[in-house]
Length: 90
Image (cartoon, rainbow, N blue to C red; front, side, top):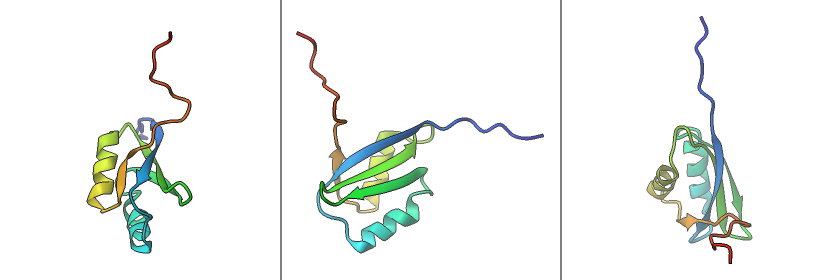
């Protein structure tokens, strides 16, 4: 009898980096990415940003940030999603 796997809720989040990543930090990202349910990452060197896709059914955004900081990845915080505006209508 086959088991039923619950569906994943994939979310991509982008963090601003305090400093550009070193080759050692990139290696660390590659080593732990799948271990923590962080599926893939992308570095935008021009904007100095790091984007991650993760399974939100397993991890919270705060846990992703905690894992990155424990790995000494110099993230300052999430980048606001463009096109999203918190202002109330006039």
